[in-house]
Length: 83
Image 1 (cartoon, rainbow, N blue to C red):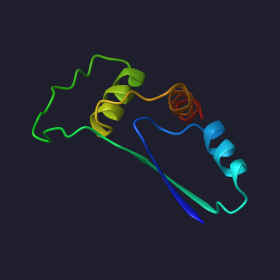
Image 2: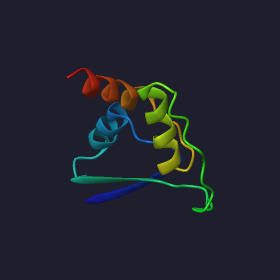
Image 3: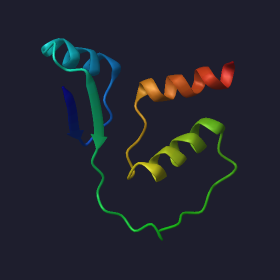
Image 4: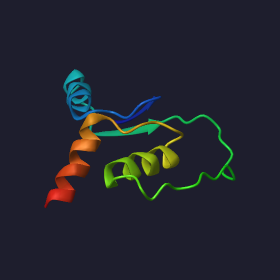
């Protein structure tokens, strides 16, 4: 069974695992983050004096309807930077 889960936030790995455990028939989970409608012409000026982490957070918000990245995503970004 394919399951589409619509929510307002991103799905954490622990939550995904729990969903798979609830029913043995779930083969594929499709998380869909619902966004508020926003005007794509609303351009913001980029502050290049920020550190790379702040720039990433601003970028992430711009691509995800102003949804801030959760700690898991930020930790992954930092891990990639340090590799």
